[in-house]
Length: 234
Image (tube, rainbow, N blue to C red; front, top):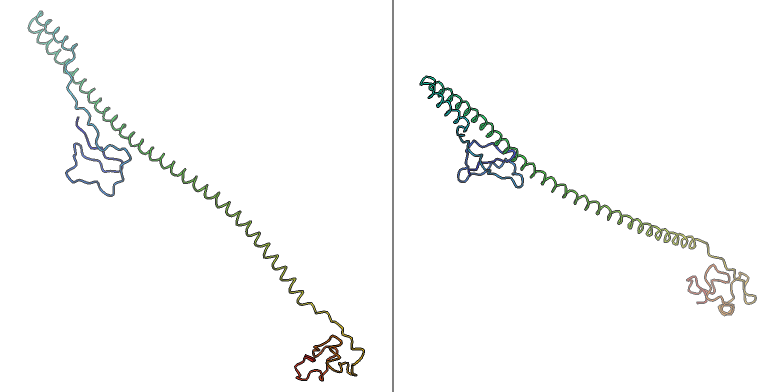
């Protein structure tokens, strides 16, 4: 059976009976054929001449016989009428056959369009499936991110609490360091002292448990600090 070129949607229509020459390639600007598209389809069957129906032949024979029985003139008229009737019948048959050819061509076009639509539908379904998979993956990633954000928030809260505790401890230490040291009153020795309140000598300071005696402390005197370094009875 002969085949005809079936251009996909978006391609330039091919002339009737066109066959691609050797080395022919489609225009790069044309879209890709839909999946499963058939570039070659069976050509419609050629129109055939229908024989004169049997009823017309019978009528023709009857007319001839009647004409024979009725004379040469009547036979000629009957034959002419029968021939006219046969021609009219053949013309009607040709018209119906032309209509059938047109309907077959239309049916072939509809089937080709249906093939294209089926291919487009399959492609659309595949795209929907792909997008559905991507949406599920995105939803899973979003859930994972939400979980990670909650974990990070809990860790940040724990870190903030630890920083606050350290800051509180540092503040307490600073306040403790800033408190004035308690003053310890040292009573002057009961004996061995001088009028200035200083120990008479280092022996007296050691006996009182005050050695060494620093400048500014009760019992300190320059005579106890021979090297004048601020510490007596070293």
